[in-house]
Image 1 (cartoon, rainbow, N blue to C red):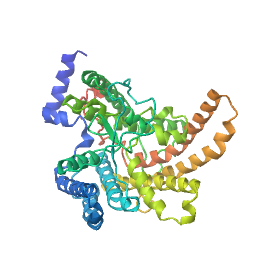
Image 2: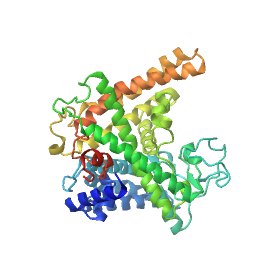
Image 3: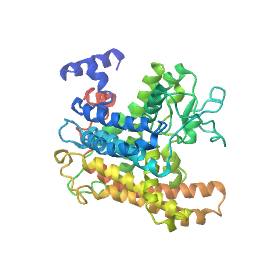
Image 4: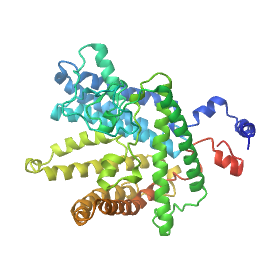
Length: 456
């Protein structure tokens, strides 16, 4: 089909659905549309959180601690209202998930700022990137890690500096900064080492990358919507034949990756086009997750680090509550941290799925505390996989040559994720995330070519 024919079909679909050009631009990422009625709740919660962060860099920040702790109550209420209130019109399950995820993250950040910091007095600092304009450019930030003694910038002393500090900290989830010459001290090494200076190349590369991602997401969406999913028994995936179970786990994994990369690539392209520093926009995934050599490497290096900071900080607070005798044992502390992190991750995913209204979730059974069991099965088996990998797989493969050892460990990781990933797929598909009403993208070239349906 010619470009003129494509545009004619697209225009006809837009006219038939009574959509304007502005609607089309907005609906390129339909699952990011937030109902305006929810704005007061999220704005209020973020203002309270921002105020709490601001007080942590005041000279007398300790005297503000009781107020910070007290303000967590209304802020948590506002986050809960934003994420799970039934009063806001949300057309799809994915919008429910997105708003619930934002709310849960906000609550965790509140706990980290207002509660956990009172235990260890940790206040994040900016650190300068070394040779930011001279080191070789890299897409994934590979190379040497942080220097032994990084340049740590002092906490701001004036009002405007504290406002900038607060905004930069609130808007980062992985440690990147709006300032291209620095990162936060909790940023992983791939963010610390990431550098880009060519704005035009960055924008053009990401536009092409975005188009490829968009086509891949369209292809996967057409495939999964062509299948019938039985959601009446609570196990729509684990009850399938094994080949279909494996295919489904891969599809859910790939769609999750694309959901992350499409949105972040879009924001990065727009921001850099408007003047933001390219070095501030680090790819959401440092490596392709399916290439992870071990389970440990997958969770620590290959998967996204969106929740890494808040999970670790809240886990610090949980570990602080254990008996002093256990705190002196590094292995016990590490195991407790892992359990705490996966418990929090399980709570996040269970809570956002539970937030899907019954009218959208039915006929999915909710067997455990109002949520499905698949979420807990997946996340609570990951610590077991890490333990088995450490005490069995690593010792048993140590004697092999490097290539064979690496592939055997990678094979175990693949088997483990394919087996346990079925439980998460039960939850994901059981709650209707593959139903026709769910629209990850609104312009569908593949549906247009196959069925003449260019716009949802």
